[in-house]
Image 1 (cartoon, rainbow over the protein chains, first blue to last red):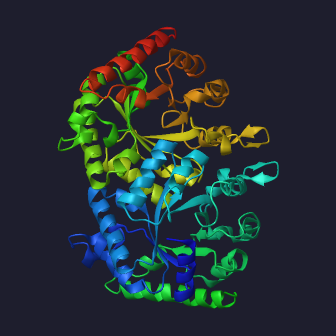
Image 2 (image 1 turned 180 degrees about the vertical axis):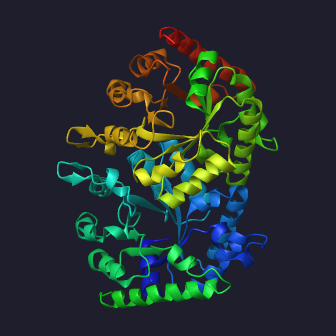
Image 3 (image 1 turned 90 degrees about the vertical axis):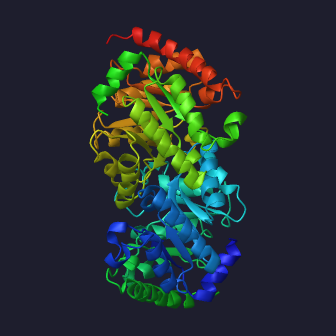
Length: 274
Length: 274
């Protein structure tokens, strides 16, 4: 998907919401657990209930890999379902990959050719040649980890060399590898106060922001410091939407939760000139 | 596998060789490409020809993932084959995973429960809570990226804060998370001159060393600066062994290449007191 197409979707849907499909067999409603493919049935219900409110879905690969071959089948069916019915929705493989060049090339092939993902999350530790192979596919995106939302983010990402923190260096260096039409960054919503400085380094790139719950305050803070004239934000919610209810009403409740976020996003977008 | 069992295997086999099963359909001999499961047939032939010379095999997940479900079947068959015939061989999932806690827990489940790997390579960027879930499985290992063998290693891994480089900080901090019986480190053979300093930080941990070819010089340098009284090294060779020949003789040639490395390792081990 091209940058312009993504921006267009945000304008049409008045949303920059991504739903994380972290689908866990243990957590899906009991009545689905006896289906032939419970994970796919759950995803399908969530997608049917929310597709008009979101601009992206983000399957988390670990949840599918933990189910072995069965999980990979569920993932393939989920992607086919989204791509055939809703081809304008941006698909993120949350996989945190990154390896030496020939290996990253194999991962890129797995996500961009075999599966029809538009983007993949990539870990920066191994540097440029571990990221480059993902950048060689036309209209596909790298979403590079910069500043993550978890507690362990503070272990290494704030390391400082000559006044520059590691996550800032990741942003600055990777700008040399591709422009804002090919590369996005993961920036945790729990780090909203860092967004201002991040926007000084990457003023135009999209940021994938996980860690936003249904709490309005945080979303407003993310928009205040992170939004660009093209929006520049994809805000993800996983558990807060897909597991908001665990009865047979789960899809309707997921829609309600997504609708609340999308409504707030619509207001935040209206404050910005397009 | 326990630390003591791994050390025992090194003593018995007089080897610290790992063969990387980076099996690429495009590179395997033509006569195998028509088999029902060409990747597994290739791996089986390599394993049959080399199992007495190695203490570890390291399937590279990207190569299997790039083949989709078929690839995962080949991987599962390969692991079952090794574990049923050669249960003393240490199995490394070269996967470079690492994510927030609940996601890393799912990856750990995938590699340690669903697949019978003894260890998995993990990227440190997201810090402690991204690594911890892999450490909660008894007799399973984390192999944390420290200093990698690729060109891009210089992009971030040498960043220096208060005289300490990023890869040194990864070593120092992660020592607090688990001892040398649970955690190993990836240190590229191309960085042999750094091994002395690395051994000052992690004197007892095993190092997984990729990037060694059939060139004796480099292996000797790695042993000189990296070997401990328990050996403390697992040296990997992938392409230099498995693709040394691409005719129907490939397995015999792979054995010969592995034998050359094992012979040299045997001599290097003899120089050390056990």
